[in-house]
Image (tube, rainbow, N blue to C red; front, side, top):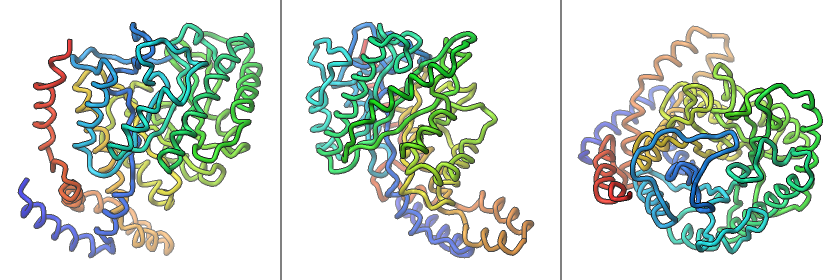
Amino acid sequence: MKQELVQRAYDIAVERYAAVGVNVEAALTKLQRVSLSLHCWQADDVTGFERADGTLSGGIQATGNYPGKARDLQELRADILKAKSLIPGTHRLSLHEIYGDFGGEFVDRDQVEPRHFAGWIAWARENGLKLDFNSTSFSHPKSGDLSLANPDKAIRDFWIEHTKRCRLISEEMGKAQGDPCIMNLWVHDGSKDITVNRLRYRQLLKESLDEIFATPYRHMKDCIEAKLFGIGLESYTVGSYDFYLGYGASHGKIVTLDTGHFHLTESVADKVSSLLLFTPEIMLHVSRPIRWDSDHVTIMNDDTLDLAKEIIRADALDRVHVGLDYFDASINRVGAYVIGSRATQKCFLQALLEPLDLLREHEANGRFFERLALLEEAKSLPWNAAWDMFCARNDVPVGEEFIVDIQRYEREVTSKRS
């Protein structure tokens, strides 16, 4: 898009927003500081580099078989960099443990070490990315239905050791990059059918977490992620939202809110203000739950908009970490990265451009008609002109121009993968 057209539209938007007390330049400055944590597993359908078969188990599933997925470390990194080049701003990369550089050898999960991620640390530094991390409890012979909550002590100890090592890896990542590595812990533990031992499994999970978190670290932050249920584990989830909320609030841990891990009629946005009062920070995993945790590509819908607005209204940008977590294998995977990332950023931009001072003045004075009217009119203010300028300043394609770029990459690179 021609720069002069972008500039003209932006100048009009600045005037229009100024009329309702909004400083567009200030909003763009804040948006520049919103770093998304891009999820490495979108590029290869959560396969990783640990096993040749790449079979998924443990309550998760990637659907679709679009050609061209990343098959090795080099292809994965190339796809991530391609997506990064089309997303404005400075961002992070979230790795699962199964994406280590294992040199073609099998390294079991209770044996993984920081050296298996030294290459990632160097690569991230070279490419202006900072790293986040995730332990991996699924897709392993010892996963079964229970990992950290398993009554079998040997299996439970295996996963405790795995998670301890993941925390150490996260510490080394944070130390190397001079910024805390956010480590997310999610386990699929649950039961397909009715259980009569709910309390016992949760006691075991609590004991496992206590042991895992016994070692304090300075350069990483712990997150604990709840889920409503997993595929094949529909009747009972040990690590429910209530469990992790209680644990996080009592142990000073960050609670992860995955937008696909709740009942579809439940508002994740509404949880933000409550969590901020009782936990130090919040981690978000943003996806689009068409039918519960279907992990569709994030779009600019009401759920994501409400979530972004609640964070901005709470003045909590410095306390909320924003990660993406979907793995759509039915469309171009690089395109999925770009669509979801840009959509999330658009939601935060609209939240930053909300005429909040005037809205709060109306509310404080009981002028609820005026509040609702302004909320509705704000929806049609020219936020898209500010978005185009944000893209132009970050030297990434404006508007739909990125589509051609991704088509070219598919034609020249991903379509040639068998």
